Image (cartoon, rainbow, N blue to C red; front, side, top):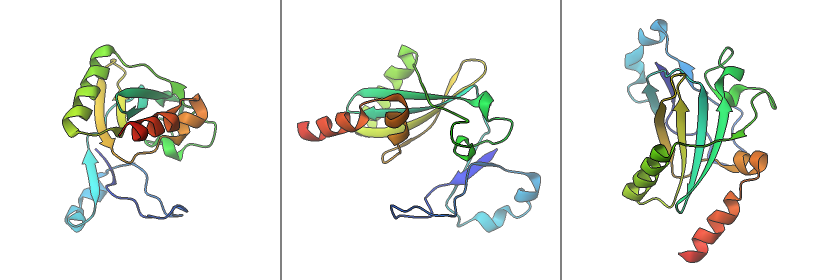
Length: 159
């Protein structure tokens, strides 16, 4: 199992020097599990990764970025811990069924925007992790040239 914080440690634009990454839960950690009763943590099954995907949904459009987990899996569970350039974003594609299901989810949630995290397993299955209605997307626009800011602006103008 892995764990990560439910909420950020900083609410300013400057961020925080203290950051908790996704981490493996060990048997030692579980000895004091009761002390986590009031901690804002998420616990989830550790899923084998071939690729991690960030899908940015903007008013029906899907912008898909993909990371090759083999480039960092030996050193970390969390791609955010890698050195700059060690783990570049690549354009990604989703099978039509997965894309359709994400569209349906966003419609049911009534969200016009969301940053969706998926894992593609070595067997080729897609596993949904979460949708963040205020998630980060700048790295996909910067690294892949996706027009996400323009799509957000267009969506706001339509509303």
